[in-house]
Length: 179
Image (tube, rainbow, N blue to C red):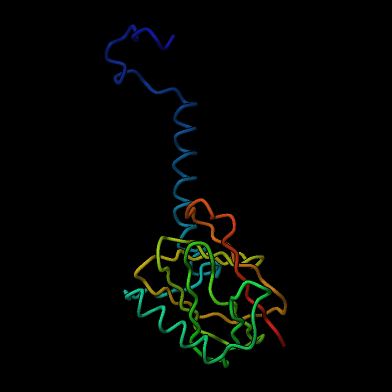
């Protein structure tokens, strides 16, 4: 029983059973395989979007986002007061995360490339574009930049996947892709 000390006090001098050696070898080989799969899937898998991060003042980022939104606003998302912004193809688009909203809503063209800048004005948030399953951690004081090219037409939900407080479950946004 494990609650009593071993009879042989120098247990490390005892020979290892063949089955234990087999399980240790299997665990070691599996660990090496899994370790090598990480860089392989990062390079070949293309599920990890390449991103850049720059330190930025939250007030500066908010001013950039509000300026771009004012220039390209085409409507309002429901009765939320959140603008729907249709930026030109190839433009930098700025998304703000704050308690408990994603701002603004973007209307993008299918097949066109955009540079998405996202930053938080308060706490850490997680940008999760569904059902694409694109995930990005959004940190305060950092401009997280990612190049995106929408490939499907439709409405895509943005949810926060990093717990950010009592209203976390209401932190929803939208990205619309048109022809």
